[in-house]
Figure 1 (tube, helix red, strand yellow):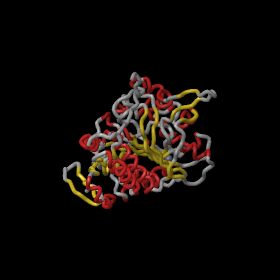
Figure 2: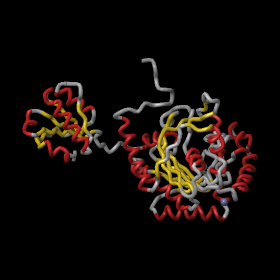
Figure 3: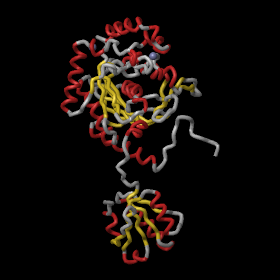
Figure 4: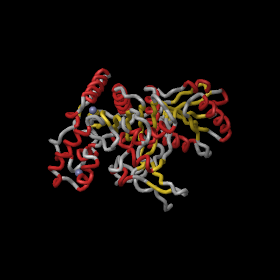
Amino acid sequence: VSFRAPKGTDDILPPDSDRWRDLFRVWDDLAERFGYGLVLTPLFESTEVFARSVGESTEVVQKQMYTFEDKGGRSLTLRPEQTASVVRAYLEGGRQGVLKGAYSGPMFRYERPQAGRRRQFYQLGVEYIGEPAPEADAEVVELGHRFLLEAGVPDLDVLLNSIGDAACRPAYRATLVAYLEERRDELCDDCRARMELNPLRVLDCKVDGPRLADAPAAIDHLCGACAAHLDRVKRVLDLAGIGYRVDPRLVRGLDYYTRTVFEYVPRTYEAAQNAVGGGGRYDGLAELLGGPPTPGVGLALGLDRILLAAGEPKGRAPLDLFVVVAGPERFDAALGLVGDLRRRGLRVDVDLGGRSVKAQFKVADRRGAAAAVVIGDEWEDDKVTVKDLRTGEERRIAADDLANWRHA
Ligand SMILES: [Zn+2]
Ligand SMILES: [Zn+2]
């Protein structure tokens, strides 16, 4: 075959995808426990949705979007993130009050591919829309933290900062621009261009950021309301027992954040000290999309990076049982048994190719089954032989007891 998956995209197949399915399950379960409903939005939106919300000055909008014209002449863009879509959906649905929504799925950015940075990548996220309370920020931080723990990412730094709001950011921004003006000649081309449009992002620059250690920090220029908000977020995180570090240098790459911003950085993951996720409050976003003022806070986690940072999986077998048929005359009985066990909730499979017993055992091994069930002559007495594929131990049990069988 001469076709290959497009550059920067991956095929994720069994058994590698077992881990993905586990993490999606952990995520769905956790989002439900925290009271977030499921949100599904289109994979593509009007280009304007991202241009307005993510921001014209951002690298995402300028260089990374998959934008195309459809046959009706509309400019559409594959979603580079989902927050803008969820807020767009909230506004379009005429919603009021609180929406707690969780999502998971592929996002698309045209980037230089490397480990943990794919052109089609997968995010898990929540949006808590319509709630200005700082406790909402803390809840979102806690949810992401809990997911990463349950996903097996050890030694996690939670970085927290506040970048102010419409009341205090203009003055801070002027102070920062004045500071940057004095150093204009030292800045990279990108930063010179973005200095006026979005000076905060200069602090985020991989080239210039580290050289500007003495730059004025937003957290030192907060108004009373922003300072009180941050204090309350910290207090609630303390109560929840979540360790965090205030990092005055933390700014998020997207334009719509206000007040709280945060990131999760695994200490063990070296790939460019990249965060595996983060988020923040975006009280100004709904207005950018033409809606009424609507507070919101959310987070997004990068599944590709989490898998790189996570330890080895706990090793649940992908199948509980693999049914091995001792001869063609037992095949119908085997199919009946498989159907019965599946209805009772076990994860069961069987070879349909009429292979030898030896070959069926090989398939069972390859598929990662915890045990094989042999249907042979003992079936006449309603019995089967169960072989533990890890220890090799064999037992003869009543077929009726199989449904209660679980690998210890
Ligand atoms: Zn720069
Ligand atoms: Zn403020």
